[in-house]
Length: 296
Image (cartoon, rainbow, N blue to C red; front, side):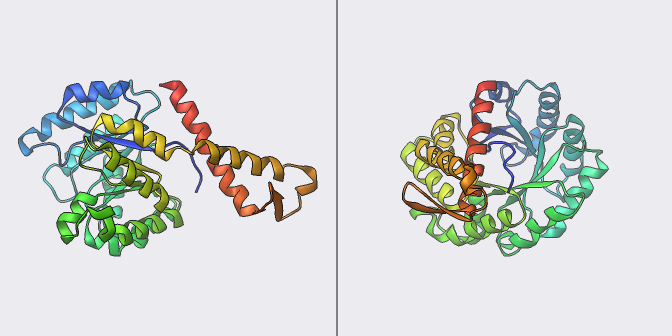
């Protein structure tokens, strides 16, 4: 998968809260999700839609990736959400309750009908039992020539609600689903973002879940509070030792005597070309993080 930008921290911001939308311009988030779905009451949907569309259109969010979560297909707000938000041209539109490849197709049709700009990507929430069973088919839609699908986002709260699985105890009950979605995303070149950690006062618990997500292969984590940004950004960035080792591997393979070799020794360890590919990815994401942080 080609790394294009950091997605360590992906912060949900309620679309009905004008102050939150403004504050987002100052936060150390890699990505912002302006939410029109779960965090907005039915009688506030229209006002929130107009507020978010205006905020996205006005810009001012710097290098942060701006995503809008619309209301799902089949709801009374969906068509108007797609039309208004597509016109504002965010970086991506996040669609909830994606359960099948047909749901992805419907989202593409909605974006086309709304005249979405070419640069507006599609993100899909993975939050239903059916989505877990169809993860491969959903991710595979990304290979279609006109596909906008760029990321899968885990909706662990909804998964817990729909399945009765306990999200505690190290998320033991969800590990298979999380891993299935990681494999599907990576197989088709998509980013994958972990679900939220609900207790924003529990930094130790958040850190443990961030580390778990990174071990599983997640690119970052969705967050619900600005206080969660710093630990999340730190954990999903390459550690200094890992970055140093990556640079050492690349330097070794760059030596003329190693140009044609598939396996070399670096500091007494056997290193293959696949390790060089991993090292390039590590260095690339570190450079992208540095660039983003310099632009904030």
